[in-house]
Every structure is written in structure tokens, then in C-alpha cells.
Image (cartoon, rainbow over all chains, first blue to last red; front, side, top):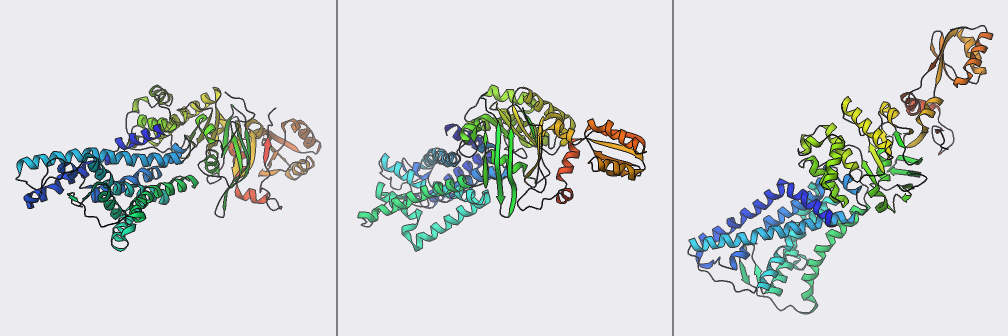
Length: 265
Length: 326
């Protein structure tokens, strides 16, 4: 499994597209911070840890789209190059191939966070020292900050899993991207119609419940004002997140395991 | 090398795609160390058979064993000991040849730079190993695919049309490589429609058509069985009468010539009979059978339908099996 993951990471590292996607995402950090700094300097403070958490700003939209593309390509490119036949004739089990791709998405998320968070803080410190920014500093414990970061990464990660599942089902990158974007839109729609079923809502709820803060779509951090939810209902968001994390992987693994590999048509 | 009666054993292997039966109750047994030619026209079921043997697709019925292990349940024991090219070579175009092999080696769970260099040298790609595969010709990709199949020093090598797209020099190189691999004790399962190639490198062949086995045996024995005589003589009607008495089926091949399949040892007897029947014999020439002739004979659909068995579920062609191993 470790060598399989190394093989997949090697391919990702050699692929220019992966680096381009990372750069695009990184560009969105200053792009999302600058307008706030210029428009309302009195409400903004990019000192530590605000600047660090501002690095999360691209994740909900740009990050999600990029993970959808990546998840779809990880599987779809093997179909389009017809390289599954090379890999499946070298290793008996099929499920490890899917798990390896899943782990690549996790690693890609970690790499993304490793780049975005320091970048957010760096840009923040530059802006803080050059502009008269004097908004409030968020007082947040390291543990709460970590929880915010992890929960904020859930949406793009799950989107990547769903795109990966879509690519397995449709045997192509395009199918994965379409299914990933469709899910993204449906999740946004669910947020309005059936809030309890939306991953975005569940994530915000968990952020609020666990850290006492939420991250707005602009990336700014604000204290949460939770209504009184207690008892079994408080477990629903965690359950929703769990289902979204696990079900796409299980479906992808089952479909891939059962399927005949007929080769490129 | 572990000793098994058969390196590859296929028992009643079948694959149905919807209403199309791609492989139909195929039975084969291949001894270790054999360079085995698997012949058939396009769409005959060669690649489907290889895909089933390697676990890429599941058989609808039947099964098989490779090196004594069940092809469906014991793939973990089989795959480290086989190498394969399945259909056209497939690689990541943005990676170099060496990096593609590195990915394959890592996928198999072992990476050894020296081993990669060795197989690249074996197929003559050392000089271009650092170039991206998208700059390779089809022939170079074929050679890289063979290098990939050799990475784990396999006991059995499945080669599906390995000379496709190669120029004549490349074809000779690959043929020699296959010969060397066969001579060093590897079992080679060579699927091809290039009969000349197969005839030169294989010591056993099987021919399939429409998913069914139509012939199997040692190349020399199959060709011996197919050898014929060209008889140029007059009058032709008397020649035909004599040949029918011999139990042979003459085919008229010219105004005063017929071709007939007859064992070489009966030639003097036939000659005597023709002379006794007052036939003027101008020429009696043994015709060397080729695998190509045998292949066309067995896979020509018009011919097959003429020979179709009346019994439902029976093969359209009787299976030619010769050269039983002792």
C-alpha cells in the first residue's frame, strides 16, 4: 500500500497540472484578502492568528473545484491512458488502488493547507505592516484553530472523494468532474431546503460546536452564536460528515472491485 | 523454478458480453518453458482470454490455473511471477520511459534502479530512457512495454501483439528477444496474428476463431499434417479417381494439376497407382505447408461454415490437436 501511494504521489508530483492548481489556489489568498483590507481597514486585522486562518479563504469554492478536478483526474487519467491494465496485472487486490487515490487526495489537502496557511499569514503581515488595519484580533486557542482548519478542509476533501467515485462509476475524468460539481451544487441547494443534510451546514455546525468559531466564505473568522442544540440532534452533523467521508470511498471501491477492465475503447 | 505439470492450464474458459460470446469453452494446457503462439483473427477472443487469465475481466464460466494457482482466487500468488503486455502499450505520456517503469515497479511493490536500467538495456531503450514517452514512436512504446513486462523477472510472459507497429528491424529485435527469453526457460504466451513471426519463434500454437479453439499442437506437427502434394498429370479425371481410391480429397488447381493432402510416406504408392492407371505424370511436388495456410484454412469463415457440425452446441470446426507431448 505504501509503495502504491508512493507511485501515485510520484505521478502527481511529475504532473504540471497539480502544481498549476496549487498556484491558482495560492493566488486566491491575496486576492481574497486585499479587497477587505482596502475597503474596510477598520474591521480587519491580519495579525496572528487571523492572517493564518485567512489562508483558508480559497478552500470552500476554489479549493473544492480544484479537488473535484484532481479527484476525477486521479481515476479518469488511468482510464484514458488505459494504464489500469498495467497496474492491475501487478497487484492482486483492487481496493488498495482506490484507497491509494483517496490517500493522494488527503495528502494533496495537507500540501494545500501547508502552503495556504503560511501564505495567508505572510500576506497578512505584509498588509498589516503597510496598511492601517486595526480590526479586532480573534482570540482562539491552538486546538480550536486546528479544529477550524480541519473542518474547513472537509468540504474540498469530500468533493474530491465524490469526484473520484464519479470517475470510477463513469470511467472518465469528465464523469467525475460532472458528478463532483453536481454534488457541490446539490449540497448548496440542500443547505437552503434541508439544512440538516448539507455537508456545508454540518461543517459550520461542527466548527461552531467544537471551536466556538466559524469561518465565513470570505475567510474571516467570527465567534459562533449557536442555538441550543443538544442530545442526539447534536450528533447529526457529525453523522452527516462521517457519511460523506466514507460512502463515496466504499461505493468507489465496490464498483471498481466488481468491474471488468475492458481497456480503452 | 517451481515444477508444475502445466505453466498455464485453461479449463472451459468462457466469456459472454451481452449476447456475444467472446470466448467459448476454451481448453488449453501449456507446459513450462514453452514459447506458445496464440493465434486468431482480430476479434477471435485472444485479448479477452489474456485479460481473463490476468484477472482484468472475470470469466462467465470455466477457469484456469497459472503455475498451479487458480486465476480468480490466487492472483496474489500469480501476479508476482508473470509479466504482461495486454493489447497496445499504455503509458503516462508526460513521464519519461524510466519514470514509467519506476511507477510500474512501485505499483508492484519493488523498486530497483539497477533492475530498471537492466530491462531498459535489454530492449535497447537506455539512450532514450530519460525522454518523455509522448516523444516515443509506437515501436519504442512496444519495447518499453516489454521492458515493463520483464521488470519482475517473470516465469511466464504474456505478450499480446508485441510487434505491432514495429519496423522490420524492430520486429527482428523483438523476435530475437522472445527467442532468448524462451531459451532461458521462460514460458511465453505470445498472442499474434503475424504468422511468420509465430512460426519462427513458437514451438507450440493454438488457433482460435470466434472464441473457439480450432487447432492446437506443436508447430511442426500441425504443418506436417497440413502438407500436401501437387500432382501435374493427364488425364485429370483418372488422377482424381485414383486419389479418391486412396481416400484423399483432390482439389483441382490447374488445367492438368491437382493438390491433395497426403502423408509423404504414401507418395511412392500413389506414384505406382497412377502409372498403373496409365496416367502421364509430369510432376509430383511436395508442397510445404505454412502456418499461414493452416491459419487461413481454419479461420476462413466460409470454410468453417461448410464444415459446421450439425449438432447443437458443438464447435463449428473440429479441433485439430496434434503433437501430444510425451
